[in-house]
Length: 150
Length: 430
Image 1 (tube, each protein chain N blue to C red):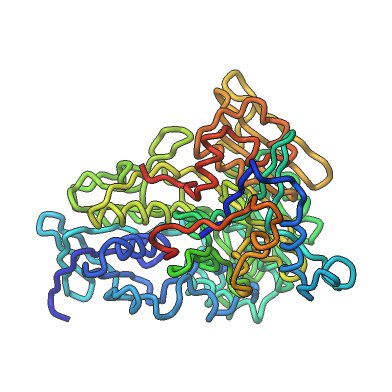
Image 2 (spheres, rainbow over the protein chains, first blue to last red; image 1 turned 135 degrees about the vertical axis):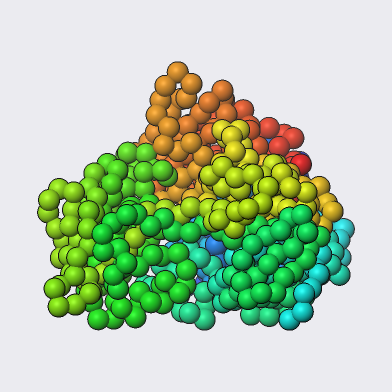
């Protein structure tokens, strides 16, 4: 399972990053996330632009996730049912091995509290990725793998 | 236990073993698997033992896989049971307790043992190696009553140990024989940055110096002083010896299994003896940047090599092509990363690009238009893009500035590579 960017449809409006930040904020409210919340929020989606072309990228939830294989504590795992690659912050020591290994630059170290790895987890608490839901032009669409994500 | 047959016998219970178990089970739900390990521990993360020493990770939280892992994976465990010898003719592993296991496939994943330098006094109480959780437990008990520690060897384990000791309020001196700290992972510039960082946190570091002997007081056998090659000495009450690890190749003594520095394996992690595989710190395997066979004792490679071995043991076909060196850690809050030929200087063959400001440092090593080495200190954003380019052998002409600035994006990659990344196919096994 992953969100698929569609460059032909992307108008680089940046709403994906806006809603991703809302989802990763304390309040999870678009009214509070950017100004009222005590903790600065972060995005796990990255809007990339080159000339007129643009696309939004987050974790690919790889079939063979090197971040999971390389994780030195066992904090990273790929959910066998959903295929979502996730971090257990209670077991993460923030060593950055996943950051160094992810070829998509999709993992960051979150320094807002105890330093831990942070990445897109497909809004698994929410049920559906907010960036996909709020994309006004279908430039992010859901993609399901045949086996693991069924 | 009676003599028993297993489809897969794995010697070792650390990362490479877990990688193999998870790979075998992903392909075969029914094959019988036995794990034999000299350590009587549930599988744990070895790099976490310095975190345990510092009190940042509890004994309960050091496990590498959940506590029901072996049950979930249906693995028979013989933990705390050393191997006596291996008989590859009869396909049997003889255990120290007199039993034996026969196997169809055997994985040697017993890791490395700490190097013990010939320093007089090294066997004294108060001298510790940081290789196992048991080492860390013993050290932790000792440190409750002491406050001045000497660390011999400034490699990754040594510096993580020094960090842990400093964090629990020990007065720490690191003694390194070569002329820089982290000599195999960092170049001189990065090494000096990290050294200054440690010094600013009160850790004393001596380079180009060795410990010649460890002495106790005349009335006790404890540690009292570490004597140095300079003629000086450091008063201390504990010594940590972290001068490297060596593959436990004694395991295959008396067999036909080929050994150089480690147990030699091909790109399928097979030894020269049919049905016998090796992975992790014990193995000498293909290293893609140099094209040579090397021991690269880092945790990610142990897992990846174990996974490749496991796939092949279960009848699949996987190739180990990702075994370059790659290290990431944080020293007293400062992120430090390096990969590939990181310490390489500029010459006819290699182009070296660097960028330095304040504590932040980034270095790229390029050969034949391919990225073959990198270092990043402090600013580590996007470093994974760099190791990705290294693994995939991408022509990086035109991307140099972005790689150095940390502004490289997927959209900058060639279209076919971008497509592969978007598909979630970032790792290939053939």
